[in-house]
Structures are given as C-alpha cells and as structure tokens.
Image (cartoon, rainbow, N blue to C red; front, side):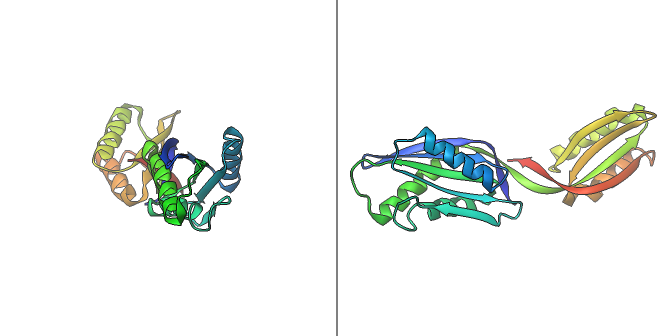
Length: 212
C-alpha cells in the first residue's frame, strides 16, 4: 500500500565535518515539490548542495531526483530509493549539505545522503493511501447512535471507515467513505442491524488515508 506524509520530518547527521540536513514534506504534485526545493535553497543559501528526490501520484509514477553537483548516483538516486522502497508518494525528500572540507568518496557520499534522508523519514508520520467507496446512508433519526456505534466497531475491527458529513431533513443522512475491501461487509452489517430500514446510495470511488 502506498503511503503519504501526514507530518513533515527533519533530521541531520555529521560525517567527517560535513553536515547533512534532511527534510521530507507532503506535496500535491511536482510543482509544489520543486517550490519546496527552492524554499530550502533560500533557507540554506550558504550550503554547497541541495540534493532531492520526489515521488507523486497515487501510483507513484511521477518521480524526479537531482544530485545538484555531487557525483552522479551518490545523492539524488539514494534519496529516490528511500522513497520508493518505503512506498512513499506525494512527498519530496531533500538533503542539504554543508561541505566540511573532507572528501567522502562516492560510497561515503551515498551512505551519508541515505542516512540523512532516513533521519528525516524516521521523524515524520505517514498514513496509508487506500481506495474507498463513498456512500450516502439514510435512516430514521432514532438510529443515528446505532449507526455511529456500528461504524466505530467496524473501525476497531480493522476496517477503514470515515463519516465525512451528516445532514438532517426528513431523516438522517450520513456521507460515509469505507475502504473498498470492506464495503460489501459494511453494507450488509448496516442493513442487517437496522432490519432493512436504511437506504445505501453508492457513489464514486475516492482516496482515503489510513493512519499507521
């Protein structure tokens, strides 16, 4: 399952007098990723290198990386590998380097950039990106607490389910998004619990976040 950053992270390491500052941030697409890279360059304007990688899209197919002057394959590619092996999307990972005057060599550089990237990732928080099915569930007012309790119980049993909106007119209508794998079980449960006194109007598929 792909996951996205829900709380940005930052971490740093020092290797042979060079300081490596790693940052990871949730972004909506490539343009926002590059805007964050430019902001980091301004923030650390006196640093020698700003190497980065980003992965975007629900399928993680939009990607880019840069070594920003470091030897090819020693910085941007290791950062991209961290994102891809972690199934992280819609995120940009950047490591800023303050050169300490000691050459690290290709292997040492790759390890240092990876370590700083990992430090940033380890300090961040993530949520799984799942496919959900949206539905409007309508029922008598007296059953609202029953439906809310049913939703809570299903969530405790591992089903990802969100009540996104509630409207009151002649009856109570809840806009509910349920993880696709659990949708049929949810419909059966709510129908059985309310003895058929419920209408489930299935809408479109959508994306939802599942906290780790």
